[in-house]
Amino acid sequence: MKTFKIAALAGDGIGPEVMREAIKVLRLTETKFGFRLDLAEAPVGWAGIDAAGKALPDATLALCKSSDAILFGSVGLPDRDPTIPKAERPERAALLRIRKEFGLFANLRPVQLPKALAHACPLSKERQGGGIDILVVRELTGGLYFGQPKKTEDIAGGQRAIDTMVYTTPEIERIAHVAFKAARLRRKKVTSIDKANVLENGVLWREVVTRTGQQYPDVTLEHMFVDNGAMQLVLRPTQFDVMLCENMFGDILSDEAAALAGSLGMLPSASLGVTSGEKTFGFYEPAGGTAPDIAGKNLANPLAQILSAALMLRHSFGLNEAAAAIEAAVKNAITAGHRTGDIFSPGEPNARKIGTREMGDAVAAAI
Ligand code: NAD
Image 1: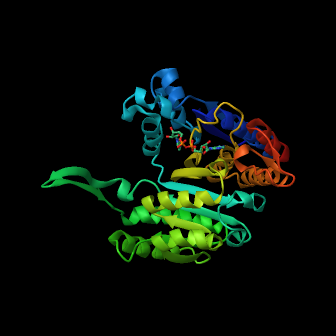
Image 2: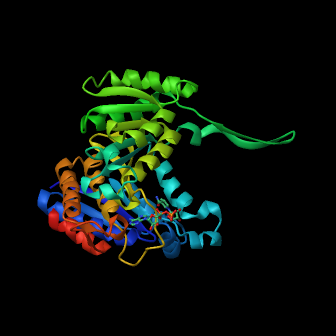
């Protein structure tokens, strides 16, 4: 029987509560679809600091290295931040370290607004069309966030801050391949975002994406300037299937797209590293944070964590059927009227407000 090794790092705040529900659902797919998940849990974030003095304890990192994928909750507790130096805080010492350690260069953020949750979207029903379904593919390790030189220096009359935007042909090619391949599994359209009218990087980005796209004749490619992309997301979001973005544009547009889904509690994400053989190492986590305001109260929406587990089955293990079953079960639970507080609207007919555990049960029952 095929076996896949998972490092499950729940982290802080709502992390452990939502992770519990994701594991519950994963265990059911294991039985139903006939594969084995060798899943080991380990502390990270403040839980790591409390257990072993470090946000990413050595044993946790070792577990990640011996696993096929990481299923991650979230880390960070703002109240405790002042007690340690910035560099040791979970967001840097755990999250950024993992990204770097595993060369996670591709960030995938699917944004879906099911019709049943139209009320949670800030756009009018007309603009939502038949439902929003966008995949933002963001380059994660290059561009303006990492280019050198990067510094602030003193000059006459003040200071000068320098950030450098750098992309190479291979960096653009590999993220473009991720976008085109993802589009093949969806509605076969890629909108590549750039600023080719002003930036040298934009010109190279457009050239390389166009050339790479020629290997995918079944996928329609269009190019859009980032400022127009930001506007079109609000005006006509239904025109987008896959949006391919460099690092900073993707950072901004993925959050803008996320707002369309109504709640952070609904949004999963995948960060992928290089593929070796049939396996792609990946890091899967909800788009939201530790939500300290609702932690430990059975109020958090576990769907983002459950959908992150589905992305893991699809992108790291190639278990497409099991992933689709989880996604369909989530849709069923929503269509049946199950709502955690973040997606509940008092006037909605047939909707029932439930807790984290009950939402996990509703998805599990629909598998
Ligand atoms: P947050 O995403 O934790 O919370 C923002 C708002 O969204 C809150 O009102 C929260 O209740 C709500 N929310 C988030 N997830 C939800 C869910 N699953 N169900 C229902 N409601 C949900 O952002 P924040 O408050 O700015 O950050 C809190 C902590 O999380 C900080 O320490 C921050 O650094 C950290 N953080 C971590 C990650 C990560 O681990 N990847 C990401 C973002 C923020």
